[in-house]
Image 1 (cartoon, rainbow, N blue to C red):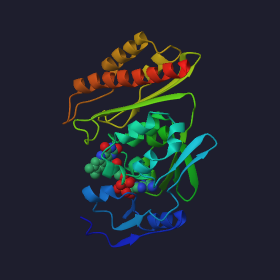
Image 2 (cartoon, rainbow, N blue to C red):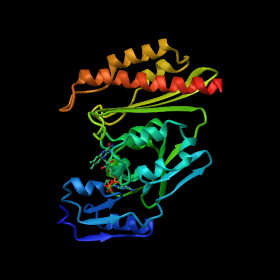
Image 3 (cartoon, protein in one colour):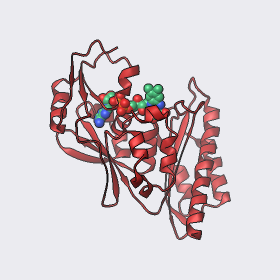
Image 4 (tube, rainbow, N blue to C red):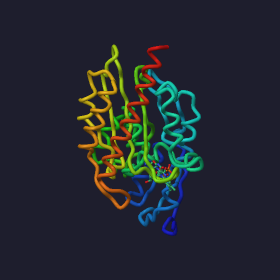
Length: 286
Ligand SMILES: Cc1cc2nc3c(=O)[nH]c(=O)nc-3n(C[C@H](O)[C@H](O)[C@H](O)COP(=O)(O)OP(=O)(O)OC[C@H]3O[C@@H](n4cnc5c(N)ncnc54)[C@H](O)[C@@H]3O)c2cc1C
Protein backbone atom coordinates (compact mmCIF):
# COMPACT_ATOMS: atom_id res chain seq x y z
CA UNK A 1 0.00 0.00 0.00
CA UNK A 2 2.87 2.39 0.80
CA UNK A 3 5.18 1.18 -1.94
CA UNK A 4 5.33 4.66 -3.51
CA UNK A 5 6.81 6.14 -0.31
CA UNK A 6 10.44 7.12 -0.70
CA UNK A 7 11.11 8.99 2.56
CA UNK A 8 9.70 9.32 6.06
CA UNK A 9 10.63 12.48 7.96
CA UNK A 10 10.34 13.11 11.69
CA UNK A 11 10.80 16.87 12.10
CA UNK A 12 11.11 18.47 15.55
CA UNK A 13 10.14 22.04 14.60
CA UNK A 14 6.95 23.26 12.94
CA UNK A 15 8.98 25.39 10.54
CA UNK A 16 10.91 22.29 9.45
CA UNK A 17 7.70 20.29 8.93
CA UNK A 18 6.17 23.14 6.97
CA UNK A 19 9.32 23.48 4.85
CA UNK A 20 9.15 19.76 3.99
CA UNK A 21 5.47 20.08 3.08
CA UNK A 22 6.30 22.86 0.62
CA UNK A 23 9.45 21.17 -0.68
CA UNK A 24 7.65 17.96 -1.58
CA UNK A 25 4.34 19.49 -2.65
CA UNK A 26 2.13 17.87 -3.95
CA UNK A 27 3.66 14.52 -2.97
CA UNK A 28 3.99 15.14 0.78
CA UNK A 29 1.57 13.84 3.39
CA UNK A 30 1.44 14.71 7.07
CA UNK A 31 0.97 11.77 9.43
CA UNK A 32 -0.91 12.30 12.68
CA UNK A 33 -2.24 9.02 14.07
CA UNK A 34 -1.57 7.56 10.61
CA UNK A 35 -4.89 5.77 10.44
CA UNK A 36 -5.67 6.94 6.93
CA UNK A 37 -2.49 5.33 5.63
CA UNK A 38 -3.80 1.96 6.75
CA UNK A 39 -6.98 1.94 4.68
CA UNK A 40 -6.74 4.47 1.87
CA UNK A 41 -4.66 4.07 -1.23
CA UNK A 42 -2.66 7.28 -1.55
CA UNK A 43 -0.62 7.05 -4.69
CA UNK A 44 0.47 10.70 -4.45
CA UNK A 45 1.96 10.23 -0.95
CA UNK A 46 5.69 9.75 -1.57
CA UNK A 47 7.09 11.78 1.32
CA UNK A 48 5.56 11.19 4.72
CA UNK A 49 6.03 13.79 7.44
CA UNK A 50 5.44 12.33 10.91
CA UNK A 51 4.18 14.86 13.44
CA UNK A 52 5.01 12.87 16.61
CA UNK A 53 8.05 14.94 17.57
CA UNK A 54 6.43 18.34 17.08
CA UNK A 55 5.21 20.28 20.13
CA UNK A 56 1.57 19.59 19.23
CA UNK A 57 0.60 17.32 22.12
CA UNK A 58 -0.78 19.65 24.76
CA UNK A 59 -4.04 20.48 26.50
CA UNK A 60 -4.06 23.79 28.34
CA UNK A 61 -6.49 26.42 29.55
CA UNK A 62 -5.69 29.94 28.36
CA UNK A 63 -7.91 32.90 29.23
CA UNK A 64 -11.20 31.05 29.19
CA UNK A 65 -10.26 28.83 26.26
CA UNK A 66 -9.25 25.18 26.21
CA UNK A 67 -6.44 24.73 23.71
CA UNK A 68 -5.97 21.22 22.40
CA UNK A 69 -2.88 20.42 20.31
CA UNK A 70 -3.35 18.75 16.94
CA UNK A 71 -1.50 15.57 18.04
CA UNK A 72 -3.78 14.92 21.02
CA UNK A 73 -5.76 11.72 20.52
CA UNK A 74 -9.43 11.35 21.38
CA UNK A 75 -8.43 9.13 24.30
CA UNK A 76 -5.99 11.70 25.69
CA UNK A 77 -8.67 14.35 25.42
CA UNK A 78 -11.13 12.09 27.18
CA UNK A 79 -8.73 11.50 30.05
CA UNK A 80 -8.14 15.21 30.68
CA UNK A 81 -10.08 16.76 33.55
CA UNK A 82 -10.09 20.21 31.89
CA UNK A 83 -12.75 18.86 29.55
CA UNK A 84 -15.30 19.30 32.30
CA UNK A 85 -14.84 23.09 32.12
CA UNK A 86 -15.97 23.07 28.50
CA UNK A 87 -19.23 21.17 28.79
CA UNK A 88 -19.68 19.41 32.14
CA UNK A 89 -20.99 15.83 31.90
CA UNK A 90 -21.61 16.00 28.16
CA UNK A 91 -18.32 16.16 26.26
CA UNK A 92 -16.85 13.02 27.79
CA UNK A 93 -19.80 10.77 26.92
CA UNK A 94 -19.82 12.27 23.41
CA UNK A 95 -16.13 11.47 22.85
CA UNK A 96 -16.51 8.05 24.42
CA UNK A 97 -19.16 7.15 21.86
CA UNK A 98 -16.77 7.68 18.93
CA UNK A 99 -15.35 4.59 17.20
CA UNK A 100 -13.67 2.00 19.49
CA UNK A 101 -11.23 2.30 22.42
CA UNK A 102 -8.33 1.26 20.17
CA UNK A 103 -9.21 3.76 17.46
CA UNK A 104 -9.73 6.53 20.03
CA UNK A 105 -6.13 5.94 21.07
CA UNK A 106 -4.96 6.59 17.49
CA UNK A 107 -7.24 9.26 15.98
CA UNK A 108 -5.72 12.71 16.53
CA UNK A 109 -7.62 15.97 16.70
CA UNK A 110 -5.57 17.36 13.79
CA UNK A 111 -5.95 14.22 11.66
CA UNK A 112 -9.69 14.16 12.15
CA UNK A 113 -10.22 17.88 11.50
CA UNK A 114 -7.97 17.76 8.42
CA UNK A 115 -9.47 14.63 6.88
CA UNK A 116 -12.96 15.88 7.75
CA UNK A 117 -15.06 13.12 6.30
CA UNK A 118 -18.64 14.42 5.99
CA UNK A 119 -19.62 11.87 8.64
CA UNK A 120 -16.70 12.54 11.00
CA UNK A 121 -17.54 13.16 14.62
CA UNK A 122 -14.95 15.73 15.69
CA UNK A 123 -15.73 18.40 13.06
CA UNK A 124 -19.45 18.38 14.00
CA UNK A 125 -18.64 18.27 17.71
CA UNK A 126 -16.12 21.13 17.61
CA UNK A 127 -18.40 23.21 15.36
CA UNK A 128 -21.18 22.77 17.92
CA UNK A 129 -18.78 23.99 20.62
CA UNK A 130 -18.11 27.19 18.60
CA UNK A 131 -14.42 26.35 18.34
CA UNK A 132 -11.58 28.01 16.50
CA UNK A 133 -8.76 26.30 14.65
CA UNK A 134 -5.06 27.19 14.71
CA UNK A 135 -2.92 26.52 11.65
CA UNK A 136 0.70 27.15 10.65
CA UNK A 137 1.38 28.10 7.03
CA UNK A 138 4.64 29.90 7.70
CA UNK A 139 2.75 32.10 10.15
CA UNK A 140 0.53 31.10 13.07
CA UNK A 141 -3.11 31.85 12.26
CA UNK A 142 -6.41 31.29 14.03
CA UNK A 143 -9.80 31.05 12.32
CA UNK A 144 -13.35 30.38 13.41
CA UNK A 145 -13.70 26.67 12.60
CA UNK A 146 -16.97 27.35 10.81
CA UNK A 147 -15.36 29.94 8.52
CA UNK A 148 -12.34 27.70 7.95
CA UNK A 149 -14.58 24.89 6.71
CA UNK A 150 -16.63 27.27 4.57
CA UNK A 151 -13.46 28.12 2.64
CA UNK A 152 -11.34 25.80 0.49
CA UNK A 153 -9.74 24.22 3.56
CA UNK A 154 -8.45 21.14 1.72
CA UNK A 155 -6.41 23.35 -0.59
CA UNK A 156 -5.16 25.43 2.39
CA UNK A 157 -4.05 22.25 4.18
CA UNK A 158 -1.88 21.15 1.27
CA UNK A 159 0.55 23.85 2.42
CA UNK A 160 -0.29 24.21 6.12
CA UNK A 161 -0.44 22.23 9.35
CA UNK A 162 -3.23 22.28 11.89
CA UNK A 163 -1.64 23.18 15.22
CA UNK A 164 -4.59 23.20 17.62
CA UNK A 165 -8.29 23.59 18.24
CA UNK A 166 -9.48 26.30 20.61
CA UNK A 167 -12.70 25.64 22.53
CA UNK A 168 -14.33 28.45 24.52
CA UNK A 169 -14.91 27.42 28.16
CA UNK A 170 -18.25 29.08 28.58
CA UNK A 171 -19.82 28.52 32.01
CA UNK A 172 -23.32 29.16 30.69
CA UNK A 173 -23.09 26.61 27.88
CA UNK A 174 -25.18 23.45 27.86
CA UNK A 175 -24.00 20.99 25.27
CA UNK A 176 -25.23 17.71 23.90
CA UNK A 177 -24.01 15.51 21.03
CA UNK A 178 -25.73 12.54 19.44
CA UNK A 179 -24.69 10.21 16.65
CA UNK A 180 -26.77 7.45 15.05
CA UNK A 181 -24.93 4.33 13.88
CA UNK A 182 -26.02 0.91 12.67
CA UNK A 183 -23.73 -0.80 15.18
CA UNK A 184 -21.81 0.53 18.17
CA UNK A 185 -18.55 0.74 16.22
CA UNK A 186 -19.92 1.98 12.89
CA UNK A 187 -19.46 5.48 11.42
CA UNK A 188 -22.41 7.85 11.98
CA UNK A 189 -25.38 7.84 9.60
CA UNK A 190 -26.25 11.19 11.11
CA UNK A 191 -24.74 13.27 13.89
CA UNK A 192 -25.80 16.41 15.66
CA UNK A 193 -24.18 18.83 18.13
CA UNK A 194 -26.24 21.34 20.12
CA UNK A 195 -24.99 24.18 22.35
CA UNK A 196 -27.48 26.38 24.20
CA UNK A 197 -26.73 29.41 26.37
CA UNK A 198 -29.45 30.53 28.78
CA UNK A 199 -30.17 33.95 30.26
CA UNK A 200 -32.91 34.45 32.86
CA UNK A 201 -34.55 31.16 31.96
CA UNK A 202 -34.60 31.76 28.21
CA UNK A 203 -32.36 30.51 25.43
CA UNK A 204 -30.14 33.44 24.60
CA UNK A 205 -28.04 31.76 21.97
CA UNK A 206 -28.28 28.42 20.14
CA UNK A 207 -25.78 26.60 17.93
CA UNK A 208 -26.88 23.42 16.16
CA UNK A 209 -24.86 21.47 13.58
CA UNK A 210 -26.09 18.45 11.66
CA UNK A 211 -23.47 16.20 10.05
CA UNK A 212 -23.32 12.97 8.03
CA UNK A 213 -26.39 14.25 6.14
CA UNK A 214 -24.54 12.55 4.22
CA UNK A 215 -22.79 15.89 3.48
CA UNK A 216 -20.53 18.00 5.68
CA UNK A 217 -22.04 19.47 8.91
CA UNK A 218 -24.45 22.33 8.33
CA UNK A 219 -25.64 24.87 10.88
CA UNK A 220 -29.42 24.70 11.39
CA UNK A 221 -30.05 28.44 11.56
CA UNK A 222 -33.82 28.16 11.20
CA UNK A 223 -34.07 25.89 14.24
CA UNK A 224 -31.65 28.12 16.19
CA UNK A 225 -33.90 31.11 15.38
CA UNK A 226 -36.96 29.22 16.59
CA UNK A 227 -35.31 28.41 19.93
CA UNK A 228 -33.66 31.75 20.69
CA UNK A 229 -35.56 33.99 23.08
CA UNK A 230 -37.77 31.14 24.30
CA UNK A 231 -37.90 28.91 27.38
CA UNK A 232 -36.94 25.31 26.64
CA UNK A 233 -40.44 23.96 27.30
CA UNK A 234 -41.90 20.68 26.07
CA UNK A 235 -43.93 22.71 23.57
CA UNK A 236 -40.85 24.42 22.13
CA UNK A 237 -38.96 21.11 21.92
CA UNK A 238 -41.91 19.59 20.04
CA UNK A 239 -42.13 22.57 17.67
CA UNK A 240 -38.37 22.53 16.91
CA UNK A 241 -38.34 18.77 16.27
CA UNK A 242 -41.41 18.92 14.02
CA UNK A 243 -39.81 21.74 12.02
CA UNK A 244 -36.57 19.80 11.62
CA UNK A 245 -38.36 16.60 10.59
CA UNK A 246 -39.95 18.65 7.79
CA UNK A 247 -36.97 20.70 6.68
CA UNK A 248 -33.81 18.76 7.61
CA UNK A 249 -31.14 19.37 4.90
CA UNK A 250 -30.47 15.66 4.34
CA UNK A 251 -30.27 13.31 1.37
CA UNK A 252 -30.34 9.58 0.65
CA UNK A 253 -27.21 7.51 0.16
CA UNK A 254 -26.47 3.80 -0.08
CA UNK A 255 -26.79 3.54 3.70
CA UNK A 256 -30.20 5.07 4.39
CA UNK A 257 -33.00 7.04 2.74
CA UNK A 258 -33.67 10.76 2.94
CA UNK A 259 -36.96 10.08 4.75
CA UNK A 260 -35.26 8.03 7.44
CA UNK A 261 -32.55 10.69 7.88
CA UNK A 262 -35.26 13.37 8.27
CA UNK A 263 -36.94 11.30 10.93
CA UNK A 264 -33.58 10.70 12.66
CA UNK A 265 -32.74 14.41 12.59
CA UNK A 266 -35.87 15.05 14.66
CA UNK A 267 -35.10 12.19 17.04
CA UNK A 268 -31.53 13.39 17.65
CA UNK A 269 -32.76 16.93 18.25
CA UNK A 270 -35.35 15.73 20.73
CA UNK A 271 -32.73 13.70 22.62
CA UNK A 272 -30.21 16.56 22.61
CA UNK A 273 -32.74 19.17 23.75
CA UNK A 274 -34.15 16.89 26.46
CA UNK A 275 -30.67 16.19 27.80
CA UNK A 276 -29.92 19.92 27.93
CA UNK A 277 -33.29 20.68 29.52
CA UNK A 278 -32.60 18.11 32.28
CA UNK A 279 -29.13 19.53 32.95
CA UNK A 280 -30.30 23.13 32.92
CA UNK A 281 -33.20 22.43 35.28
CA UNK A 282 -31.00 20.55 37.75
CA UNK A 283 -28.42 23.34 37.66
CA UNK A 284 -30.92 26.07 38.53
CA UNK A 285 -32.42 23.94 41.30
CA UNK A 286 -28.98 23.27 42.84
C1 LIG B 1 -11.95 1.59 11.14
C2 LIG B 1 -12.13 3.09 11.23
C3 LIG B 1 -13.19 3.60 11.96
C4 LIG B 1 -13.36 4.98 12.07
N1 LIG B 1 -14.40 5.45 12.82
C5 LIG B 1 -14.56 6.78 12.95
C6 LIG B 1 -15.62 7.32 13.74
O1 LIG B 1 -16.42 6.60 14.34
N2 LIG B 1 -15.73 8.66 13.84
C7 LIG B 1 -14.85 9.51 13.20
O2 LIG B 1 -14.99 10.72 13.32
N3 LIG B 1 -13.85 9.04 12.44
C8 LIG B 1 -13.69 7.70 12.30
N4 LIG B 1 -12.69 7.22 11.50
C9 LIG B 1 -11.93 8.16 10.67
C10 LIG B 1 -10.76 8.77 11.38
O3 LIG B 1 -11.18 9.69 12.35
C11 LIG B 1 -9.93 9.51 10.33
O4 LIG B 1 -9.38 8.54 9.48
C12 LIG B 1 -8.86 10.39 10.93
O5 LIG B 1 -8.29 11.15 9.91
C13 LIG B 1 -7.78 9.57 11.62
O6 LIG B 1 -6.97 10.41 12.39
P1 LIG B 1 -5.39 10.29 12.28
O7 LIG B 1 -4.81 11.15 13.33
O8 LIG B 1 -4.97 8.85 12.25
O9 LIG B 1 -5.17 10.97 10.86
P2 LIG B 1 -3.99 10.64 9.79
O10 LIG B 1 -4.29 9.36 9.09
O11 LIG B 1 -2.67 10.80 10.41
O12 LIG B 1 -4.23 11.87 8.80
C14 LIG B 1 -5.43 12.02 8.08
C15 LIG B 1 -5.24 13.18 7.10
O13 LIG B 1 -5.07 14.38 7.81
C16 LIG B 1 -3.80 14.98 7.52
N5 LIG B 1 -3.27 15.50 8.79
C17 LIG B 1 -2.98 14.78 9.91
N6 LIG B 1 -2.60 15.60 10.89
C18 LIG B 1 -2.62 16.85 10.38
C19 LIG B 1 -2.31 18.14 10.90
N7 LIG B 1 -1.90 18.34 12.16
N8 LIG B 1 -2.43 19.22 10.09
C20 LIG B 1 -2.86 19.07 8.81
N9 LIG B 1 -3.17 17.88 8.26
C21 LIG B 1 -3.04 16.79 9.04
C22 LIG B 1 -2.96 13.88 6.91
O14 LIG B 1 -2.00 14.37 6.02
C23 LIG B 1 -4.02 13.04 6.20
O15 LIG B 1 -4.31 13.60 4.96
C24 LIG B 1 -12.47 5.85 11.39
C25 LIG B 1 -11.40 5.35 10.66
C26 LIG B 1 -11.22 3.96 10.58
C27 LIG B 1 -10.05 3.44 9.80
